[in-house]
Length: 484
Image (cartoon, rainbow, N blue to C red):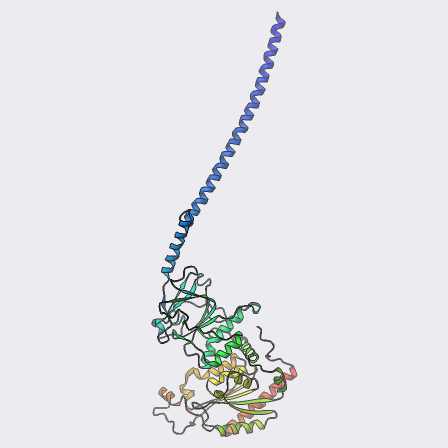
């Protein structure tokens, strides 16, 4: 009977071992399922969290989740930005006692961008304007305080505003755009800015010019200046008059891109000015079809030009003065004298005359601005009426300055001490500033001996310089290389 019990025990132990093995496998299987469940649960939680975050951000930035609500929210924000645009006077009367200092009285709340040696300018839109564009309102030509300006976001322009495409040059000139000296001083910085930003000569020319004087709109430039800018930019000027459906003083005009200048050539280094005047000289000669062959034929000549004025600050005896210079010129081999009147020459007539001039002889006046159209290192002889040295102030030296800026030699100035007009007498003490109004436009006398010796000396100096340049094979500005 013992044997059956022994076999029964063995079978029981075998069944117990199998049961234990199955329990272990079951445990492992259950553990795997538990882990898998936890992983799937985490994935679902993460997915839900991502979807919630996405919806939350969408709600935060759009206000709601539906397209219709988004459009309403955008319109509301744009409307608020439009309403926040504030126009202020172009001419700030608070600075009328110092209109040209610092930020000036023109767009006084704006600051200029200025890098060493470069022009002072404002650009819109830009980092400085925080991406906002320039808008102006009003076209008053008599009181600049009635015209105004503001900055606006490109997608939230003032109501009923007109957006003008392209680059707009906005110029402030404290004097005027008809006098070629004052006008040139106002436009030179735009040429400098254009040259610096004209990458590979691919930058577009200005679509329009907006001109201001004391905040008042000006709708024209003098013909000389207009022609020079047409030559520089390769197209006729488009001077904005704001008469194309936006003439209402309440209508705003915004510019896709605008460059503003209000300091003339202030801040520019001499090297920068030389570059600009070389460019203008070259472009003017191309514009006026000046022949290179003609220029080569006169390498051994000395061109002396008397550029006369009529009326104010003219020579009282122009025939006698011309005779003195003609005789002095004859004493120098190759010298030839030309007598011309600036008022009788158009722009290209003056360009061609200056191209053939090595010595410019002329009274103080705007016509002397033409000097930069001569070749570099040419000479200038300037003449003043009585009283200017003591009474005229720093402005009497402007043609010394432009001679330096454009690479010319200012050969000095003769000042009349006796008065070309014997009947022009100041009733006040000669140091009284009121005498300037008497002498400002007086005619100029002459000193035969001094004029003769001075003219001969300058002509011989030019002859020597040209000979040295030929020996050194120096090159001068030509009509075939203007940069762009």
